[in-house]
Image (cartoon, rainbow, N blue to C red):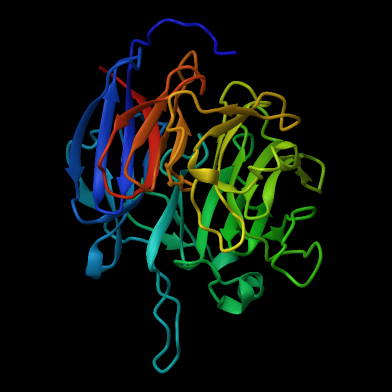
Length: 384
């Protein structure tokens, strides 16, 4: 049930990254009416836009500038103005005559631990982990991952097996301990570090890899989105290429909770959203993962699914969404929540629409149409 509450004294900003630039949706705390502005960086591929929760005003944007390649932009005034970062993530140049790794794009951004106010992490394609200690202006590779002797083995001997290249994503920092981190890779699996990235171990027991000839492999899985709950950081959820999973530490084996989804829908998708105040509540947005993986809403009838009990059961939430002939899907960074009461939810589609719910998925309204293919949707509370 949606929780009742009054309008927030702050506005809600929804940041939309697309195949052709960035757009901005803004509403007051009631979230009844929205204004759309943009584009910013028209023609750029925008993979991720994230607000620094530690200062409430710094934005980082991961972009690819067409034929000019990958970069990152930084704003200290909530997007009113931007500067390109001084040194974006990049692998070391290979010795002459040798083939090296080259960053195709920065895919994922995560602010560091609350006690490390200028630290950020970034994940790239091909899979690489980078760290900034000056608020995102300059980036260095995390050697413990990028130079790990097992790195190539984890990633199918450096053979990208995803349609548009391997991705490093879902970088999670345990807010009890800046040294404790998780990350996921498509493909490669999920990994854990207890020494701030100096070393890593596979963290995939129980996660299926139906495409692998090895049952229950140590690594090589294809997580789509993994998240750690802020109030219960020993609980993690994962939307995988092969199902939906949960783990409660110190357990070492993931449990597939997606088997409780309706069989005709399945438990395959990309995004995963956790309720920030309720560790048992989460949302997914399934797609058709059968046969040739059409990557569309099952049957052309899109819906979010919510669990209020940690995955023991699931509820379809489709009020207000198209009831037929809606063949879109939602990418892994393209669904999020705000912190409102009741919780607001947002998702962007591959057909360029943004949908919003101000009652925890109980009903949906389309708040933007005709945008380019949407890659990411993130939200923030900002001063009026």
